[in-house]
Each structure stands twice: as C-alpha cells, then as structure tokens.
Length: 100
Image (cartoon, rainbow, N blue to C red; front, side, top):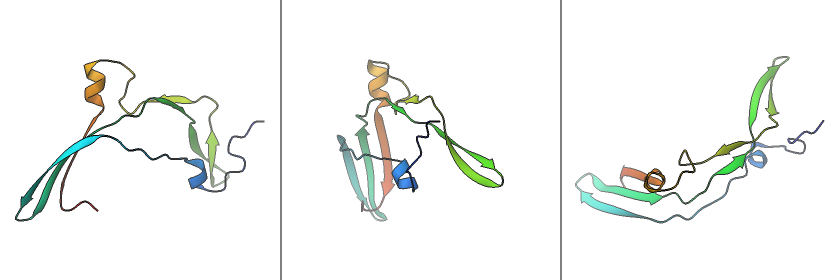
C-alpha cells in the first residue's frame, strides 16, 4: 500500500508553504487614535492541485489519513478569465495602527 505520509514526523513537514511577494498599494490617514490603513493587494497565485488529508479516530486515537485523489484549489474560487477573475484577485485590508 502506498503511504504518502511515511517519513513525515511533524505538521511543518506535512504543510510545505511558500512565500510570495505581491503587488498592491495602500493609503494612510494619521488620525488622533493612530494611523488608519487601507491596503489593496493583488493575489497573483494560480490554481494548483493539492493533496487532501482527513482525520479519523481509530481505537481512541486521532489518525491522519491521506486521500488518493488531489483537489484543485484556486484562491480566486475559479480559473475563469476576464474582469470577474481580476476582481476576485483583489484583497482588501483595513486596520488601525502601525504595521509590524
């Protein structure tokens, strides 16, 4: 039996993340309570096939079980083209205070 989780000893090894630098812009307003920030970013990532795992309880212990079929994930919800896809890629962030 093929076990894709063999040799994985931690969650960090299971979830292999990646960093990204994305374009965007922001506006700051210095109010009496602190800077108010409005940032808009553009998610440039494309859809990708990801492994699917689930958790089962066997004999009172929680076990991570991989599924054989990967699922397609797109951060925008679709791989459609055009204006709708472009608008789905915008990410709005509102906050009060300095960015750290």
